[in-house]
Image (cartoon, rainbow, N blue to C red; front, top):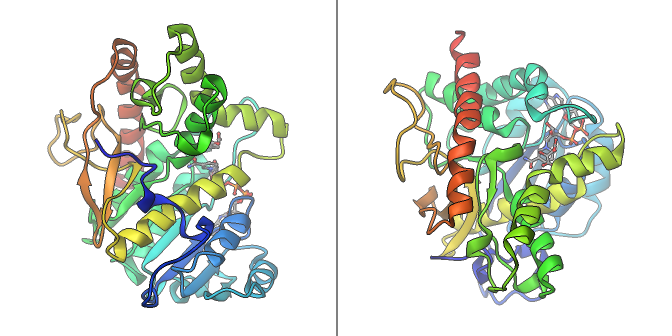
Amino acid sequence: RRSSSSAASTPSCLSRRRFSSSPAPERKVAILGAAGGIGQPISLLMKLNPLVSRLALYDIAGTPGVAADVSHVNTRAEVKGYAAEEQLGQALEGSDLVIIPAGVPRKPGMTRDDLFKINAGIVKSLSEAIAKYCPNALVNMISNPVNSTVPIAAEVFKSKGVYDEKKLFGVTTLDVVRAKTFYAGKAKVNVADVNVPVVGGHSGITILPLFSQATPKTNLSDEDIKALTKRTQDGGTEVVEAKAGKGSATLSMAYAGAIFADACLKGLNGVPDVVECSFVQSTVTELPFSRPSMLIFLVTGESEHVKLGKNGVEEVLGLGPLSDYEQQGLEALKTELKSSIEKGVAFVRGN
Ligand code: NAD
Ligand code: LMR
């Protein structure tokens, strides 16, 4: 079983030295929602990433300031801001990777699904533009509810005849980042050495950290594992409550999103064995839907380790051995995840 903390997935912007003798290929990255709470720091982090040669920053409000600001950083990427809807096509054209943090965040008392009403429409229209202007780009979906926004994008791409399940990713890296941090804290091990796979979706009990596969191995009690699981599942809510009405995770999300985007770019550039967890279409075990024309998102292994390559997902790795507790968690998440997926599909199909 590969680990997502492999050397290949050390983010390029965070590595101290680069040994490459030839320059990295030209890569254009577009960020949709670039002036938001996540958009701004992730724009900065992508500007710091030496794998990026062009950075297109698009938002419906506040783009010029963010683009001017980020553009002054003396790194490789050439930055351009795109401020209005009629500039979206230009922002997207030629993109290798599109990162989407556009949409409203939660306030205390809300679920991620409460964001569906507003964000579903935003994601649908942005996906239509991607289908038109850069149908071959990899798409990193950050906007919530991820369990529904990824199926929305998939359905839009299908309806436009450009769907490639290898190129669409729900960004769930923040769950992995949290699980690693919480595990290291509880087990008193060096967080830099820790890896914890997280499967399922990205909301409440659909987030399923697999602490039985965490490394380094430690002898935490069942009670500790339960508490760590709950804290990982509630990590987003912990931040929403601490921000008390001023939004949800932005800085840790930008960090997580930058790690995942970097992994995608490395995959495109042919770096071997780049492995991350992501919410992708897969057929590892059972198919959740009886209607064959429905998305074949896998309810039992929705968020998998994926090996990233030149075409996006190169291989979906299995769930690995689960503890009884994790197996129960997997069974418990199916209903909610299935209905969130179906809600996204129905939104695009108009039923
Ligand atoms: P924010 O309100 O600070 O920023 C959102 C930005 O999107 C704003 O700048 C807004 O102008 C822009 N926007 C709105 N409609 C747009 C459109 N049609 N085209 C382009 N830009 C548009 O919110 P945020 O804190 O950055 O969060 C953004 C989203 O990310 C939320 O849905 C949030 O729930 C989600 N999120 C996901 C994760 C995850 O792990 N996947 C983590 C944190 C937040
Ligand atoms: C998170 O996990 O932090 C995000 O999904 C934002 C949220 O609403 O919790």
